[in-house]
Image 1: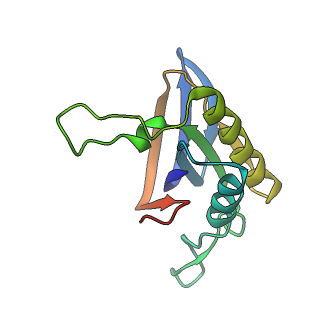
Image 2 (image 1 turned 90 degrees about the vertical axis):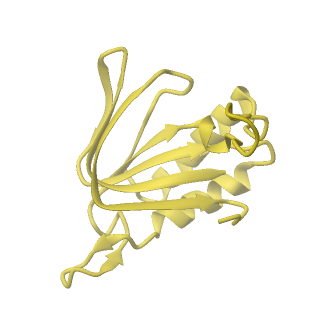
Length: 149
């Protein structure tokens, strides 16, 4: 699994002009599911993000995780995180999991993050979404369950 984790002041997701998710301060998480991913990847990545210390404490240092900061999360499925653009001009997505598996693991990730104490809202799987965010920092962290980066 791959994730882009953004610290935000606010974020929202609209589908067909309908607001389906909205948070104040917290995390906007773009999540991609790869061919080799399984439930253990969902669990380990959710745990990593749950305890990621990227929120400021009283001294202004990044020492708090999302729960300590009182924030929530919006998780948006994003197969394009597995886009390979090393050759040519059109990315190949062969490393991304097929939709049925990807959706199940996306939901598993969301459930794991929520059971770890993070209030979670979701995008809509396989929908065209309008995602809005006010980045805070900006702080953007790239994570990969295989620890490739």
